[in-house]
Image 1 (tube, rainbow, N blue to C red):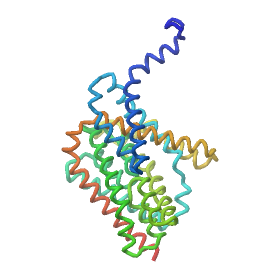
Image 2 (cartoon, rainbow, N blue to C red; image 1 turned 135 degrees about the vertical axis):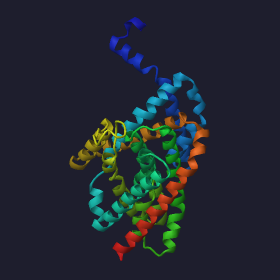
Image 3 (tube, rainbow, N blue to C red; image 1 turned 30 degrees about the vertical axis):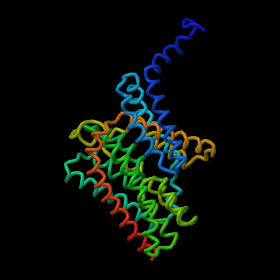
Image 4 (cartoon, helix red, strand yellow; image 1 turned 90 degrees about the horizontal axis):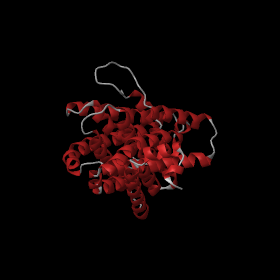
Length: 336
């Protein structure tokens, strides 16, 4: 087939896609490598996607690659966040009971509030603080990505988001190893230990790892508790001021992917969807988020990240300790 034989519609589509194809392809390759390494060593895929992307960031000096990387880091990220709606159900909230839900809301809410206060004291803007605090309070890298997509733009936003993702993953990995040991030494039974693990560890994968390292019962309870925290993400997204410049009033403009997230969550709640569809959406959402993280890494400036990671890690570490304390005290009170 000669170029003249190509239908006009297909030709126009190819002309629009071609400038972005090289960069998207590089991000996909990096994400596949990260997935292979993570699967081989049972380690966080997000972290490897980020680190491999950063190691290959010199590739974005070529504008042909930089264009596609930027698209994957923005549009790909938003699609992944939207599809997360099919992974959340209100049913997990009812299964835990009112007391546990109060603990989860108090823990996550107070963590975000304290993070905002600390951020203000450090001279951070609200957007910078809420990305870091939300990653600790809700669900680590996924919450950081979602909040970064809806908060107002500020200088160094992508670099800050990358540091938050790295910090959340590192803190989650530390928690996965040490929290079960600490809680076991404190004498908690497996049910309460699972509740605390789900209420205090940031990333879902590390919650599952920590819970099932204790027992089957602790693992299932930890997963349920964690998914209840994830269910708070749309509410947090709706409460975050978006769009416009600071000082333009309380006008709320919801990006399309936040609306899609909420709609898909409601559909998942009230419509009996085939398991094949929900499983596929979970896979596609996860793949898009991993590839978006790889793209963020590709577009990063490692030297700049090293200069800014210390304060962010310290703030998130302090918030993690607070969240664990609230979970321990709250679960102790309601259980007994």
